[in-house]
Length: 314
Image (tube, rainbow, N blue to C red; front, side, top):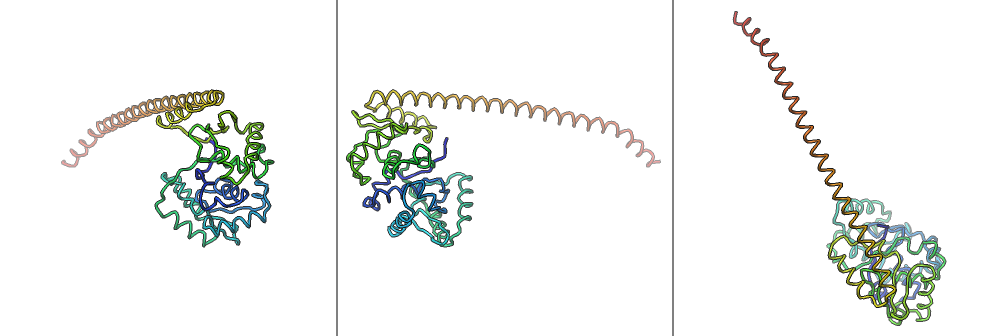
């Protein structure tokens, strides 16, 4: 499973950001999943590198962060260059001990004392987990994406986490609604989709207006039978025969690999049990041998002790 970050599904339809400019929406979305993030959503943001990655001026990024701060979406410390995503813990759970250890480690690394206290307070609250989609941390730093225009990068990010997505990554996309949500023209959205197809980032069927997001299954797990059934059901609803055929092939391959992995796990467990049984037997034999040796030593010492007792009686 490749590295990704949980990012709010339908983030660009939030009331707090719906009136932002396209570049500002891209920056806010980027803050959730980029390769500089950590487990607590408070990290140092290298503005020059971000500007290069997003194809946006550094000054525009700084201005956007100020606007996001005014809207209480982020908190930024100019002295340390660290940023905190205020709603981070509504989309991140820490159930396992390893995750808890990572959280404590990342909190200790925060340089800004003010942001550290905000993170501690936010992490101590019981979150109401909301819907999210895993977005690749390197989505906008890939070689085949770096030279896209900012509007095109925004559209690509949108395809990974819009409200129309489903479990199999193939869904109907209403062009007019998507364009309105991103504050873009419909022609710009359509041109971007065709550019993504040429670069192998997606597949698009104009007749059914359906999108297939490539690499989708590299970032989505289907561990339970219920999740597998949901994925199959979503695939059956695909209208485009071409996209449906491609999707079913991917799902069958994914499930086949999953079954093989489960079989390997079962075989490993059986082998481990056999080894444990053999080890226990060897341990039991060793203890039996030790007890036998103890008895032999006891038998050898008994005549000596009897002789000593007789001498003492005399």
